[in-house]
Length: 377
Image 1 (cartoon, rainbow, N blue to C red):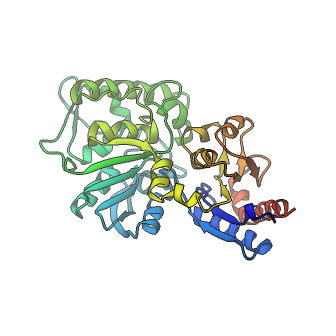
Image 2 (tube, one colour):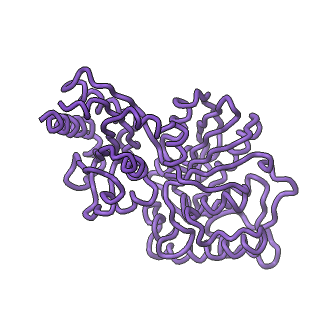
Image 3 (spheres, rainbow, N blue to C red):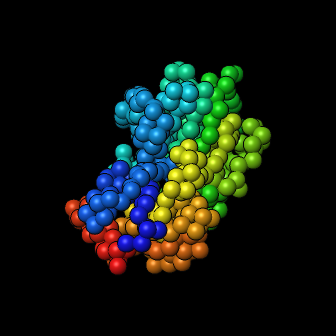
């Protein structure tokens, strides 16, 4: 094998619904060492702000796991975990309490709320957090963060100044928003890690791009969009925050808009934030080839997902970046221009998830083994 391919950096995202990023690293490293026992292998299980963000900070930054009981999107108690770091940074995944897996079989984006997330933020504040990194990926909600805001003391009223429960079905009725006398997070710096750069509104916004996978049907979509439009107007007027077209505002059903509006926080690319936290550019100095991947690579991958975020950095240093994925959409030509050298898939096309779960580990092992055979030619 050429010397230029003896040092491997493994940096996958989780394969949603089948394997964690750590499990993918295990499979890949075993395949590499089976063919090249003396290879130097570095492992960096990644996240783009969704699943895996808490695990990343626990592992990379010597964090301690904190547990808190909060309501899930429909009010059922759930125990959520986040990471508290020695420097008083709290790393919180929104998906820990509003994630899609929590509502399997009962999706309803007109009722699902982010109230539990607000309670997680309050818990972190009570434990002395000075900075919060909030991962926005993987949510089942489309409420523009008003449930979270309600937990923090914000109040919403209709045109007659009657109080409104912070539900997405009420968004179009909100006539004004009243902030708390003292925001419990006002002394805390909040940075949201976004896995997409979509705006809040429009064809590429939170509702029309992501709500269908959260259970919204054709009847719900216009209602949810009207609610989002109204919230954008009310937020701009009452809170002096313009969020309708901010890149990333459409992340996590509008939580990307809620972060600057209700938390006074900022939005950033989740993958870039985590790569910087891991000192990724320094790791590349001692790397010959990078393996990355996700469950399904598609056109959306170029808008903030792990493989493309990693590929962009590899491209700057002319380091091969190979994406090993579960499956791929038909048109992924855009990802090659971002620096991905090749996309290899374990499946010809996305399949039935119950069947995929049964064979995914064996399929990924076979794919990684085939890649090693090719690299050893």
